[in-house]
Length: 615
Image 1 (tube, one colour):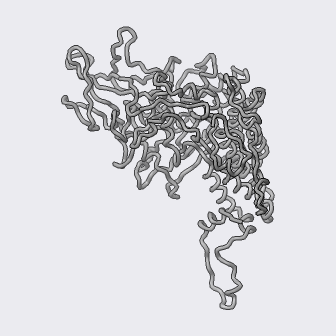
Image 2: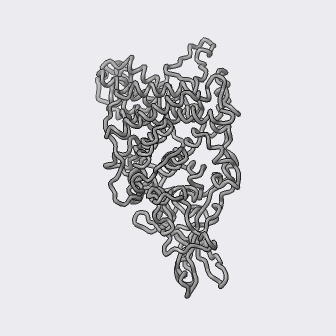
Image 3: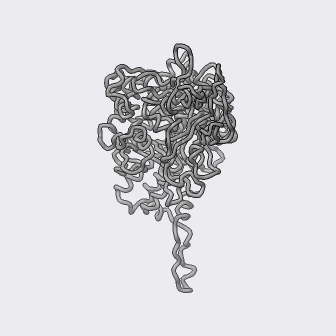
């Protein structure tokens, strides 16, 4: 039997070879073979395997893999080289595809092996290890079902008997609802057996509850909103589509799981920094004394477990490595979804309502005054700083010729105008230059402020948050709203808004559209956007492929310094909103994108697998 875990363990072991008598040579045990009994009775070896399994959990976008996809939707665009992500004519049906049973196979093998060979493990050790493996398997099934719909539920090793007949190994797809039900039942079964209290890198009771809350919310949304479509997306045997009458049950489970975490006191919203924008940034990125993060994929420079996310995405003018990039840059679309603290629309005010003249600001950052503090914690915008350094964001100058303004811009970053003052910021924006923002904004969330983190030699050990308490508040709010418990839903949402600077009880009424916007601004760049739009069944409306639909296009904000000598407006700042340069195709999400296509090789190997709709 091929045991990949043995290769992993052998790579980590230092084999000590002791001297032996010449006559014992043929009787020595091989120093390179490890028996089943050795593996499954050694807690350290099992823990090493678990670490490998945690690292193999899939994610569409995360800091060490897939992060470029942040620029494929409407949170950001691609300002780096090779801008294919700015020209996505339509999302391919294979996008988000996942049909990987290798991790499930390894987990099933591990569960059976612990039970069979783990004779010297204590009962408590066997219980905890088995519970952790089942959690990981449930997590993997959630990643499968949210992409593919119903998949075969395999919980035992499938072993070929070499009879020439593979049909005993060929399982049909389970119903989509059955997979979600399996996830819930597994998490219920293991949550009190996981141990790892206080850990934010290994599963514990609250991690299981967090996964359950998210999965049940997805299931409830599909049960409700898929069935509200003019033509619900289904398959005859339920492999795709969840009956509408299941929505209440799923929402109830999502709410109960989130409430148990919130009410436990085991986690609290991060509120340690009086600067609310910095506080929100720290809530996601700070590793020490942060009780908001429930589970993260951690990295550690000292162990050479690092990634290049900061190197590839730091603001151009403050990068530490001349070859660093500024690839993923947030869009104006996202910026304007952060409301003003008086509750008004987040649309930035760059023109007067009466005559359409520019609004003149004393400083670039003034146009963002009194905005939701989560904006500052997520995005670097004009007039702000990073690592204590000003991030110069200025597109050029507007020179008054007596009757109108003329644009003057430069491809030389940091260049001065003829008056000796700044013409173009060291961080752009630029209309055509690469590796500098084309939108007028840069990422702050997940950009590592540690010295040398944006260099090739050091890189970053910023962690990737899988679950945090802020999401649980939003899960609880949405589920409560769907269950008609509006007062509770308002309380959960307003708690998060108050942390962002809004007055207490800032929202008096609530609807699903408001919940959708709160998730957009709270969870931006945390790998939620595409999955949220899919489960609400509005992705095809938001990204409809039309250039006249502002949601399907990417927009930019360009600041200019006014050059108007002798006039009170001289030296002030005005802003232009424009379609983002280098962005060439509106996003198009088709009905066939709600469930990814199944590769033909899978169907060839197992004729019992039915295709997803529209493929």
